[in-house]
Amino acid sequence: MNFSYYDLKNLSGGEIVEVTLSGNAANVFLVDSSNYSAYKSGRQYKYFGGHATRSPVRLQVPNSGHWYLVIDMGGHSGTVRHSMRILPGALAPLRETPLSSVPSLVQGHHDRSGFPPEDDEREFDVFISHASEDKDEVVRPLANALQAASLSVWYDEFELKIGDSLRRKIDKGLANSRFGVVVLSKTFLGKGWANYELDGLVTRAVGGEQVLLPIWHSITKQEVIKFSPSLADKLARNTATHTIEEIATEIVEVIRSR
Image (cartoon, rainbow, N blue to C red; front, side, top):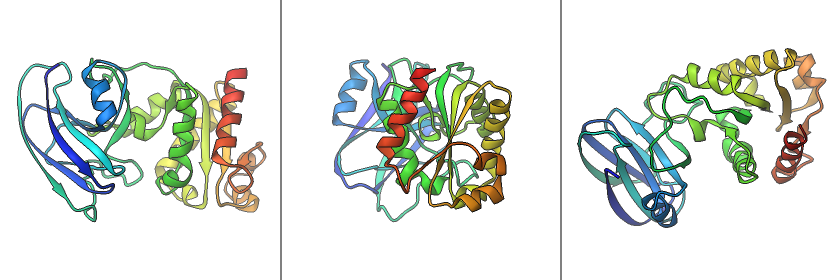
């Protein structure tokens, strides 16, 4: 394995790790102690970061603990020089893409062979469409619960990395997913990319290629009807009456039954 690392010791959640690169592009990511051990031994691991082609890269520490910064060549030849520093958590992470609804960092699971290639043709059990404002309260816990149940989940924080073509990656995720979960909220209704994803989900559902599973979050039926009468007619689950765990369990049961 061709990689370098920094032992960052104990960091507080929200702090920013800024990495300056010079030379070839590299995979730059944060891992905690247990996942660093898994990474070195070639087992699956959870990371926060992605493929960096520009410098500097800023990674936000997700929670307090012992963290390592890894600069991995991803199986490619060449070298890269690097330095790092810790910034206060009040600073926002650098975003290489112009869309505020998609994070510039990714988290997920990989083996030692590196990050998925651009021609990746994996199939997914479920695609999750949502507004970024609903991530913390609903979407991230839901995605983690579905993934913990051994489902293959297309969720932007699992799949997108710096430099990706958002349209191509989203289109591929939409086309290669058996089920589509859409988290409808007041914020979602005004999001351009969220509506782009929804159009794709509805098109596949009408064609019988995919099952659409709506989740209502802090929104009324009248608001959904005003936005899309046909969507309001679909059986949905509401975060006001069901917990995320209950919704995730039901989604898992539906997908496995098909």
